[in-house]
Length: 498
Image 1: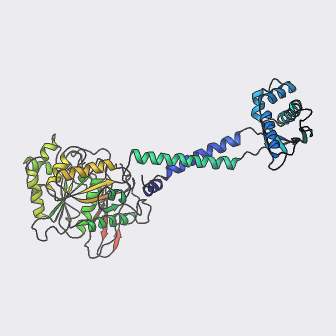
Image 2: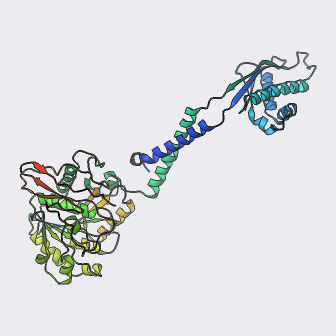
Image 3: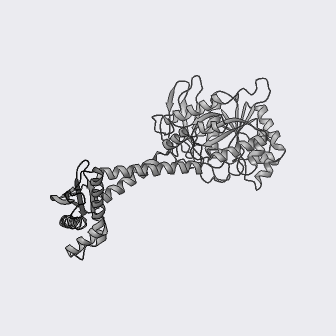
């Protein structure tokens, strides 16, 4: 993983870093505060090697340190104390010794939860060490100089050891940060997801839009306006989608599909259709997801015959078209539920139906099923002029996007690009869509995301209140676009489900 990509992953998953740091620091702080206090008693011994050789003096000091922390001194302390509560191992663990740099002073210490016991251990250990040193030192040195000597220079002093709370918390915080960083790296390597436009570019996809609210957090003062502007940017960045009749009698058919379920394909399709309708273009929205249709719920359409009846030969295209947004948008519903949607879409009537729509409308938007599922999307891609891939931010895996691109290339469908759906789970309330210049008054619908389990087509339509506000998955806003005055009647905001 590149360093830049790893930094972006850490910024995106900052909670993965913060939580281990807080947990580790809290545990370290609790253990430090609740730990029993420790007392350290220290004594200073003066060591004379009996010769002027510095190396000999250093060797003797090191010998005394090894002797002090060895089993012989520990056993001598236990014997002198005569206390069954102290063992030789405990004495060895509590004793420590060090040489003051540049001197012949040996500092020994003993640490114990009891101040009296630590003082008793260090005093006894010093006495045992002096005795042993006299026993092993030669009485008459060969060079005729003074005999090596060790003596107590300073009696025991006892102090309480500091708890080191700040140090322990700091070390624990660093450890927690390291663990969090490792977790982020493993998560990115194991389940790489598309998080931003740069991820799509690395996959060879050009991003034509990012559907988000005020930096993807949805906490701005005008979330509805931000959502509308996001779809307008998507409309303006689509390559030649609205100029299909220039030099050609036919309009353009654009299929919108995601790699899997819950990508927000229906939400993006409805929002793009509304944005295109604002320009005055003749737009038809085709709900081609015959297995789990959702356009009807977004636009609050009654269950009526649609694409299924056209493909089965039971109805003609003009008979099943429905108008929405005061006639600004035309919808071809999915129709009644059929037992074999795949076989119906494979009917030769599908290319004829799309051709009829492109001859009548400027833009044909097809809300397609997931690409990495049944073959429905592949069949629809063959009759569409191009395809727009809908990718859910921080959810769609890069491997799924690669499989979708490969499928579209195999069936010969031109990929117009990708749109990154970064809508939050719940859209906050706010002002209505911003007024567009010289656009006549109309009803603007702000679509939400797709539900978990789509309702069957035969479900009754969403109820309407006397004041005209639709209670359901969409919020209808009456906007006087020509004058710039906005009036919004907002029902209770539903939560977006993934």
